[in-house]
Each structure stands twice: as structure tokens, then as C-alpha cells.
Length: 127
Image (cartoon, rainbow, N blue to C red; front, side):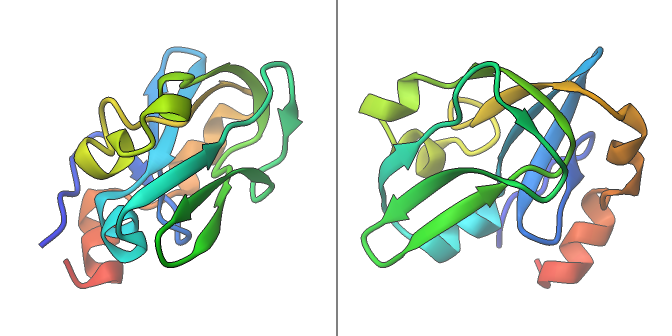
């Protein structure tokens, strides 16, 4: 059974967002990393890049597949988790902590409200 922490918002594409003031920290869910299996490479977004909700933000590559990471919100990338370049396994070990992907300055903070809460995401994934 996957971890689905309360206090985060979740997308249908299995990304999570944690609101941090005017910013949103983004990563992939425990469910997603379980499906991907061992993550071996991460392509992070460039700081300063503007994204719209639903845009590909970066890429994770596992031993079995390559998968885009989609931005669940619109805004500007203000930080990317450089530690993942040398330690992509952080996503497998700690998807909600050490495995975060990017920090975005929110263009439309209300977009977060349209994402699933933990209970809805659990129901959607059967976790």
C-alpha cells in the first residue's frame, strides 16, 4: 500500500504539490515510484522556466520505462532538486521528502484547489 500524506494535493498523473506560501513544491507520488520501479536517471527543469498546468516539467527514467513528469500547476521554476542528478533513487526512497522534483512560484495559486486531496487520490489509485 502506497503512502499518501495528508496536506498535499495530487494530480491524476501522480504528481503531488505542497503549498509553501506563494510557491508549490512538486514531486511524484509513492504510487508512481512503485509503478516505475528503480529510478536510474532524472532530467530536471531549468530554473527560470515558465510552465503551464499540464506541461512536461522533466523526465524520470527507471529500469523499465521513461516517464514525463507533468506540472500540476502553472508558474515559474525557482528551484530544482539537484541532489536527484547524482541520487535519482531518492525518489524511490523518499518521494515526499528528499525526492521532491521542483519548486514553482505559483502563477495561479487557486489551481491547487482543483487537485485531489489525499482521500480522493487514495480512492483514485485504490491505495
